[in-house]
Figure 1: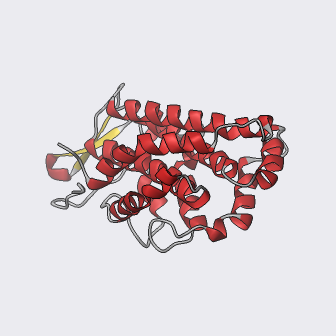
Figure 2 (figure 1 turned 90 degrees about the horizontal axis):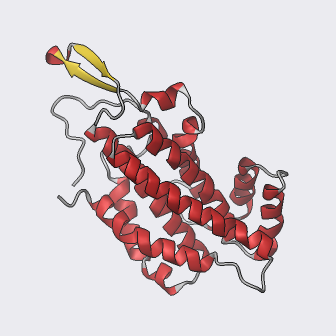
Length: 250
């Protein structure tokens, strides 16, 4: 089974996009090596966290998969900054490394100085609103919180739906959870692609613009993500669909 269109597209794009990002963020002798190394390492961290999240999700280790995605979103901010002109990025990267600027302060700088020139997010919302939703979706999983603990439990209906049974254990499999985390992983891939298209003229990145737009449309019409609402709320541990309503995307 191939899976929904957004999954097929994200799997097709992931490898080439990371290759393009590696070329775009590669340190050079003409740049501030100390500063340019930061986003280069952030890209490696993103790649490893995303792959580890995919493996954990397949093994139904959902709390591990989703907390790794929190790391992915954090690194996207540093990668975004790393793609900017060196005169803008280097002072901010040094300030971040020295503990003088937080991730939140870096995001606010990008929001003010860079994001206004980015195209809209998944639908017609600004990039600011899109990334705020993405960050909010994974914010509760920065530490071991009750919200993160929720991903370790499965709640199933029994007796005609009148009772709920809580299942715990090492890996209680849940098809809906697996798909929802996979969707979030695809959002990370799409976000990386958009950052490349917005900030580089790498021919391969530009060539994938049409596929990235197809991925945007597929993600935006997913039954697991609701347009016109604060969709981060849909990425909490527990969610139910009405009886007879299909949650599966084509």
